Length: 274
Figure 1 (cartoon, rainbow, N blue to C red):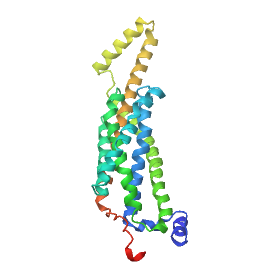
Figure 2: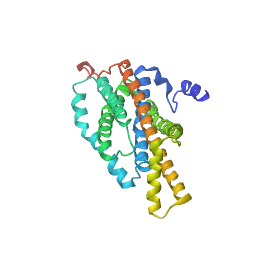
Figure 3: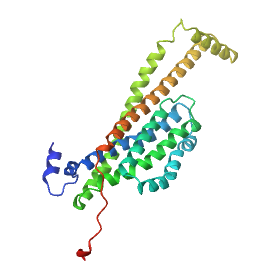
């Protein structure tokens, strides 16, 4: 409270909260926050999935995820073309909407997804980033007075970083809690009445016996394999849940874009001014 009170009353605050009185700036900070969630949380989730579930090396992970940057670069000419012909609000709406679609495409993820399966959602995400971020900057800061622009731009960028930090922390919490939930639900079906499980254990036990692991050692090893398989599936379902929750954030943001005012380009100086 003391921080907010000081920023509202001193002449040159470090963080100028008074800029939030401008509707475009307040909404732009919200969009920056949501975009930060999308940018940083997905960068956190995708390599984590490939490393933990697929067992990819650092090089394999890099090769699998670099397509996002490639498609973002390829979308630069598209943004330049649209920016000269469309209202920036609608371009940003397309970008945020594409981000939501990308998260929807991520949500049915399975344990065997690799670079090929990730190509489409990552391509959509790369294009979405290019269409969402630049117009958000122009719409948010373009209507502010030059005297407030310096401090307001700092707050705008802070919101993106804050969204990324909170988004990553929230995703880590979701991964922990939802993995436990999915594991418990899957484990409820793993009992002696489950014929498919009994057949699977018998098959794995036979394979282990051929390798010299019979008796109690073989049973323990079979149950260990069952636990790992169940945990892998629980993790995979949780990643799908997390991507879907990020998508919900972008659906909300997309619906709020029409609330922004159109930013008029700066007026050219008149002849009388010379």
